[in-house]
Image 1 (cartoon, rainbow, N blue to C red):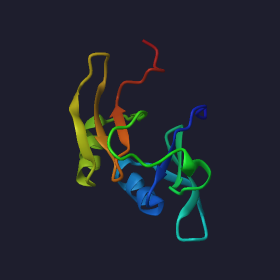
Image 2: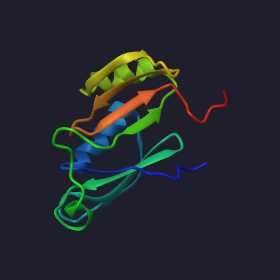
Image 3: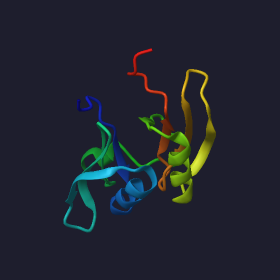
Image 4: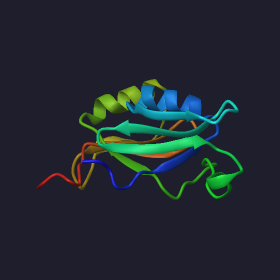
Length: 133
């Protein structure tokens, strides 16, 4: 099953972000298209059956309405992981800013929240809302 909702995220340095997201969070490159000016026009990274799309932030196209975060954010992504402790250790080792500690969640599962190298907010946890109770 493929994902029907795919978050999109602009990055100031999309090439560095792609490398970091793969190392720190375990994403895999699905497609990366250079923009011809040293940036990334469009990239697709996958994690399980989910995907994110990203590119180098610019003042043109969607860049005129969507910017990399500069403080508070209004949206974030939740990613289901098999082992929250191992994922947390990997992200921390790669320099993710942990903003909510690893803990047992009241609604079930174990998880944590962090910011990536450009400030996007991410939540990772073992709680799977699709799993049958």
